[in-house]
Length: 159
Image (cartoon, rainbow, N blue to C red):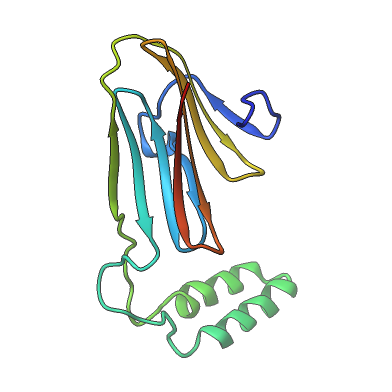
């Protein structure tokens, strides 16, 4: 069990109300935004293969050369010229797609009395956790992603 007093921990006393307040998790393939909450906890899910348009490698044939040209210009102190190269060549891919979310997972709880709600992101472990007491039962929920297993894992404990 994680301790909500650790120094490398972002702590909150309420659930997230918008995307920017959710706790981000990811392993390079699968991601989640943990909003938390008791009555209706929300976890936004995403996957790296969900994009609009058609599959593309994202290269336009000049990206490599444009990168090195912009790098050379920047190192020579010609920052405006380097920026122009990046904007006019490097970033002009043949196909541009927009990232799409996979969906939301909701966890409903019918508790009538909730006390001591805490939500945290443990930075070193890459773990989002919630703790609270619901109708006299102490609840712990934890969520993390595993890179080697390519999984998003949820754990629940009731005491």
